[in-house]
Amino acid sequence: MNGAQAAGDVWDRNDLKLDGGRVIDRRVYRSKDIYQAELAQLFTKTWQWVGHESEVPAFGDYLTVQLAGRPIIVARGEEGRLRAFYNSCTHRGAMLATAAKGNCGGSFTCMYHAWSFDTAGKLESVPKAEAYGAELKKACYDSPAVRLDTFCGNIFVNIDGKAPPLDEFLGASKQHITEATEGQEVLGRVRWKLEGNWKLWHDNFRDNYHPMFTHQVLTFLYQGVEIKGENHDLGGGHSYMKFPPQGSGDSYAKFVQRLTGRAYAGAPAMGTPDKQAYHVIMAVFPNLDIQFGGGNGSPYSSYSVLEVVRPISVSEAIIEIVAFGHVGEPEAVRQERLESLLSIQTSSGKVSADDTEAARRCTIGLGASEAMRWSNMGRGQAPGMSGAKNDEYSLRGFYSEYKKYMGDILRSENN
Amino acid sequence: MIEVTDRSAIEPQARADAASEAAITRLIQRAARFSDEQRYVEWMDLFTDDCRHALITRENHREQGLYNYVDKGRLALQERVAYLLGVWHTPRGKTTHVVSVLDIEPAVEGAGARVVSNFIIARAAPAEDSKLYASGQYIDHVVCDGERWLIKERTAIIDSSFLPADFADLV
Ligand code: FES
Ligand SMILES: [Fe+2]
Image (tube, rainbow over all chains, first blue to last red; front, side, top):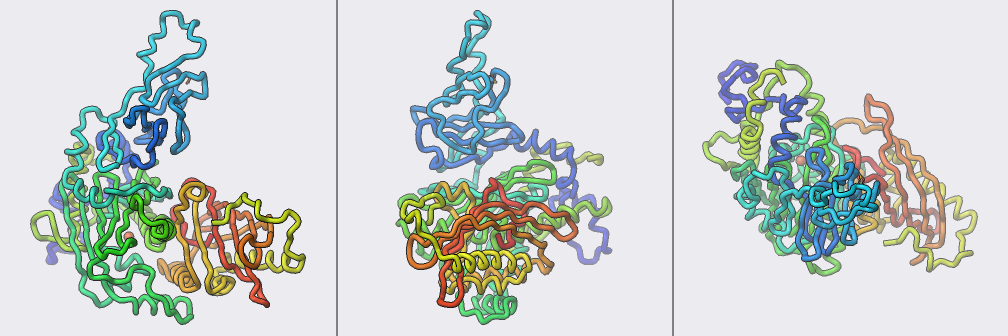
């Protein structure tokens, strides 16, 4: 940004609009029309992470999910194959399964009139079918298949039959999804509400500028140290940030002592600095984030969690975190992971709860005035796709891909 | 992990004595009150030095046991209290716990008693009306240090399938 500019000019500069990639039009967080277009053009045309193979290992195991308001079942068939189809009875529409996951015993029988479907959504039986005479052609009543593909055990579906294949869609993110999830299995999920537009959560995952200010339990890491780390736009809307733990525990101890009025002699729970250790925060377009770490050889340094944010309205979303552990790890390591992996995560976590609060405040603040039209995402001025930890190549990469899916609606002045 | 419904190891007629029951009930209620009055340091003092304070959803409790968090020992509790007192530079919303003690039984392992109680917590966010914050069950292991009853282990099991946007207050 040009420092010589008059204050206020930035809000009016056309060349800084979404197309210019350095500021983002705040209507994307508030406009109901843009939100409807996101459902139609983004959530139904991109590959959506819905689960992991370890969650549905056996014949009849299934998961349910709603994408852009469309209920979908992912089920494993007798021959081991995973398939997805709409969670809607072809008779009169009742959902075939309501649990988040389970085992269907080989078929889904509708609770309403007991039409029964196999694990591929094919209509198997209709009770008392005689009354339909010859009119009922069973093959016309299969629940339509939804495209499904897997990468490194991760299950993705895509409602759009014409979208490019998963492999192509994931592009440069594949290497990092492999690092994060290869040889791992799911330990559980936790969901919480976001009182804000879904993109605020996703933006937050591409923003490494805020942690040293927002997260008081982390600020000790940044006091008086040189900030190290990388920020990459991977193309295709995906991004990657990598940084080492840094700083010392002394200022953390002071923080705890000051606030509680009691001496504190513990080691910081939020990470003992280690030269080899690193953290990665990766974002996969449009609504998947993966955090993982490794490097110092300790079983606990090698962790992985994944988050999906799914909108329920323009100003509300559900975030789901999925915790991973290494297949076959020792029982003590597994138990420690179950107890500690989410301690800073979710809306009860000492880091993540701060992020949900930031999103809530942004949501109210973003409605202040049409005169405040742009949000700045301009950190890191060097050309190219990579910069330092606190730069925003990651964010700009998301919005340039977003623009491709959303098209003309972002140019309309009336949303 | 102590199973909610597994009472097989407990003698049916085994009971804590009446005086202990009253003291234990007071301890559980005091933990709720200190939390609601944001007297977090005093709340922390109701726990033993080697305490365990955990939060888990009903779904994960039933399945693989993935915790939202487990604070192990007083130092970890102190960190939680520091967080509650320091975060966001703004006052926290006022909570109201309604806790009903359901059962006090001698602990299956070791000394003390196992206490099962239900809770409902409402919260009034600043400038908002009160909303239901959480409902669920505490499974506590309480011990007597000779003078006072203290909480050695608390697991709060949350019933809802998704959590409120800010779930950082004490459950
Ligand atoms: S709606 Fe499913 S059988 Fe009638
Ligand atoms: Fe954050």
